[in-house]
Image (tube, rainbow, N blue to C red; front, side, top):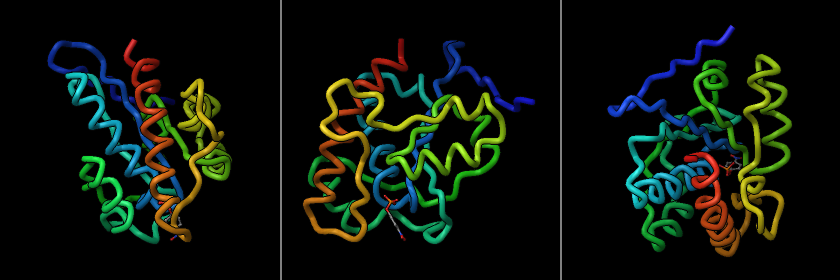
Length: 168
Ligand code: 4NP
């Protein structure tokens, strides 16, 4: 059973629904959400997308992104203002693309996917880039400043390709 709501935008085009997912939803997935929102806005395509992020654990529910992540993102012009929330059963039906950050995220998402059809929506952000130097976005939480910069470098590489491949 699908409960997907194919809400159209003002022009009657069906929204493209993307959910970014990481472990805590305070570092990588809110950054991917923020960078993707920024890029989509620059392209004048805000009305084509429904974008959100979520975590696989609820430990940080209600929190803003990690202060270190927000500071690094702000230096590149991204304001990260989402609040952490855990992924829900309904998310698997609502979103078209459920995009994890590393292989542990992907395995957990595949375990949680309620149906074979919803499992097909799961990918990794680096899967969308033809030239990503890494096959995942490493968790920066327990590391130093360079880890947060690396997260943003990889996300900025992947986002334009994710946009091109989903907008068409
Ligand atoms: P994220 O980073 O998955 O990129 O948001 C982490 C945030 C919190 C924790 C681990 C990773 N934690 O263990 O609380």
